[in-house]
Image (cartoon, rainbow over all chains, first blue to last red; front, top):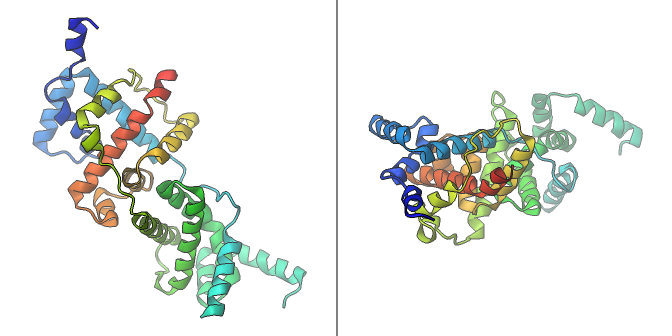
Length: 91
Length: 203
């Protein structure tokens, strides 16, 4: 990697602080001062903009994951019914 | 003892009832009605347990425990409330109890990797922020990577982003301060993003 590339690979001053604020920004939970800082930082930092974009996409997709999944062993109704019957016998 | 034909007719009648009618009957001790409630809601309850516990077998046991708890506490269910929400809350609590019992000492990500190192790794993600929300293959991959997160990070992300709890509700559920819960959610999200980098680069 050339010296110029190495310099370009270094994070900008403020990247660490900016990236720590990304979840709050996405959740709409950022105070005014942090909002101003983040907006100013994102305006000049392409890497943090990319991270924000991809983090947003990940969260959007998490929110769209299906809530339902089929139990691999089939319906739980029989097993639950058996446990209730066992409990009532032992009570 | 009902005949087989009689049992079939009875089951068909139960299956046609509303949740409210089934809850009412179950409160009176009717296990057939409760079994129908289990069949109606087991995919959601199992889904919550699976995402929080990762292990399918343990998730199945957890979902069974949740329904047994629901049966025992049917009298506490307020009929105006959504049954789905009530069962969901019981399932979350059962899964959290199991996670606490595991007593897994998890490595604090920041101790060993450091935030900046993590950031450098996520920088490897190519300039492809255009993940399509409708991409089912991506979601399947996301689901798998989610299961790989350390328990404490996965449960925070699942509760916040998959189950839709607020930051404060996550903090309450995990018995953490709001700041600690938010930090855990953020670390989980960032780590998940890092885990997805190869998949994105391969597209």
